[in-house]
Image 1 (cartoon, one colour):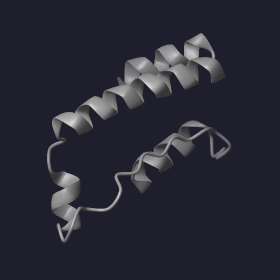
Image 2: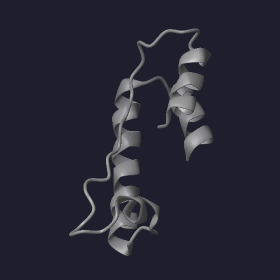
Image 3: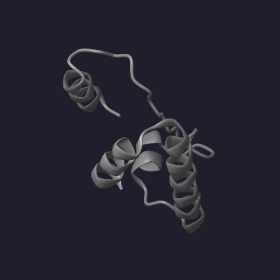
Length: 79
């Protein structure tokens, strides 16, 4: 999440930074691939499948942590 988006989230919570965060990394580019090209390239089929599985796992974890209302909002906004 870039700084502007995170600032918007913090502003939404009236400056409170005490909220759960989920960070997703992409790892290092393979070989000598340029970082920009690595980040901007389309996902491979395997990466798309992993993202779908990851999303499912995140939603399950959130369902154990958050209220139903929070999940409905999260689902409507991000998925």
